[in-house]
Length: 241
Length: 241
DNA sequence: TGAAGCCCAAAAGTACTACTTATTCAAGAG
DNA sequence: CTCTTGAATAAGTAGTACTTTTGGGCTTCA
Image 1 (cartoon, rainbow over the protein chains, first blue to last red):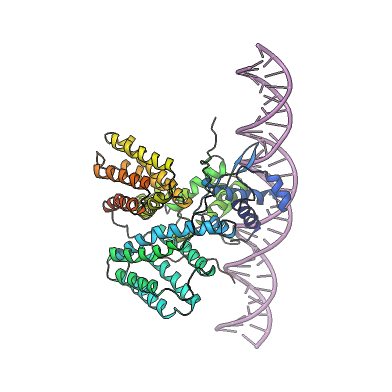
Image 2: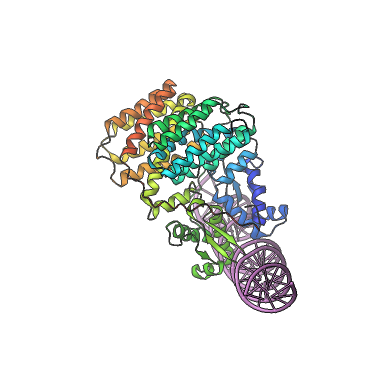
């Protein structure tokens, strides 16, 4: 994804904007970028177009490239998520992702119970069992955990839930990496995963939803309070004379 | 957003891809596009870069521009959503958006109850009251409904929920536009909105969540079954020799 | 005959230049 | 003091020339 000069430029500019190094309102000019990064105009423009498509910047003739306020950003763009995670508000981003996950996974479980194929249900159960047998090895446990949630989201029969698989993976990895996980996975959590798998196999949406809700509500509890850097800045819209 | 030639080209190519006119696997070449749309290479390339950043296409030297399978697409990109809504799977897209909304709004309400400022809570209540007084005028009702949900999402203290405001607005507009709404808004729904506002004012997350859940669960019931055009195609990843 | 390696052509990637268009800001006219 | 006009600026567009990657075919040798 980072191949090519526009990609490299993007990986410089994107994090710089998202991290606040170029705060909203900052004005860049194509020529500056050409000189600063030693790239041709073609390359600079292509990178800018992508940033523009993420709503990180807006370009205006005679003015230049303006960094937009955060409410404009396409926060669901995988690269924006990645860049935010790499920057100073990593913790904040992990919080918002966790909350997002907490909202969607229970209902995804419910739909999975209604729509999963027998094959999917079987795989879920298999993975859940593997979760229990690998409770001693945190890394292996993590991978199975991710596989479980990915498969569940895919079985929900909703594209948009499926696509949240990367978010869930990121959150889970972030948790173990930051040692926010107990040394030994909570046996109750393991039990709940099996419960979810059973409910889906049985085609019992309410039970699947309840069990998944129990899983995520536990996660929400040991989550830091929101960092109140809430920028109430309204969304920027282009002026039309 | 559609200003400029790359923008116009994008608005031709994007919908064409998303609608299936250029099915996954289709190979385009920059030169073709230049001739077909009478644009310069610069323009064609900039449009392609944006499509690439949405993971709608992948470019490879000596091969060309390949349309990627749907699981790759950035389904949360506002333009992808817009294009899907304009195409043949509008109904399907409305379903997935509604389900997404159904998952997130209850938890967003819960967080709003914990985090909303007194001002926000007051505004929510005001809008809820206005909802009741405009039950006779479907259009006015719709706008207040949208304002209510937007504000609630913003009050949740989570960027990513806030950004779903557009999704909710789209879904709500889609419902009334397709006459899926009763001629007169359900009085029970109105009551529930007030209940949500009260719970948020009172700082009572469980009550806010329960009321919101009641609202969305009603919405989920009169939703068509999933169109089983489930393309189980796995995600495409570039080969690395 | 088949496998390995080499070469060529095709298509994207990059650079550079010239020109067009929109827009802001300021100067000047009323 | 306001309105108009014009000039400067920076993005937008076009076109060309060149580089780099890579897939596929062709040759060569075992």
